[in-house]
Image 1 (tube, rainbow, N blue to C red):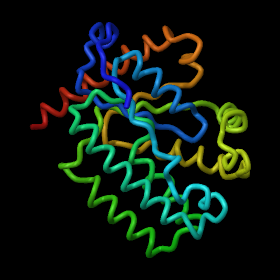
Image 2 (spheres, one colour):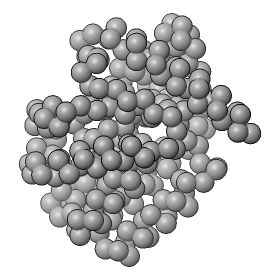
Image 3 (tube, rainbow, N blue to C red):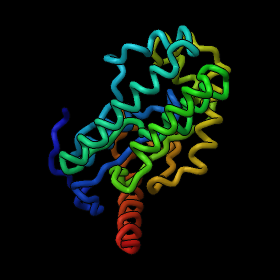
Image 4 (cartoon, rainbow, N blue to C red):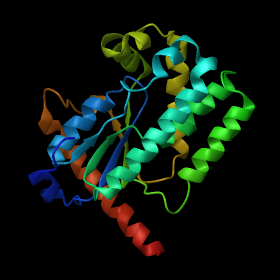
Length: 231
């Protein structure tokens, strides 16, 4: 696990040390790179999507209908445990991908494309709602949604994606891209900050993240104030 440490930028803009920030966006948009860069700037720990230990991911890309339900259940369990872990630590995390994308995008896409049965889809969504969509589930302070043009994102997948992703037809990525755009338009579990991937260069120009951090701080401040007003 990355180490929690002090951060002049976090103190400058008043980001709470117990904040939990989630990074969302379609495959290839650069969530992992952004997650690490933001965590380093803020002195936060990193919560990374577990992929290498996933026993279904490789088989899923070979046969979506056979392994889609298994994959989604695995992700749901792992993300639920990770969400609890971050809050048990007392916050101070930047998280690569949210738990909300699983049901709002991937499970729905499998079902609508005929790769998940109606029974499996109903079972999955009911389980998700029972676990996540309750007052007791700890939601993040903010979802940073990374976005860009479809062409830019496909180029990134081709250049940096895993072999199984590079072999996936472009029609799959197009459908996924459109679903993400639709999903973020109705997302309401926590405050959202939309960031275009051309607004920063997390690798070669870390200073380009400072204006983003300022916007993050403002969103968290407003979000926490709103929650207090509702009590």
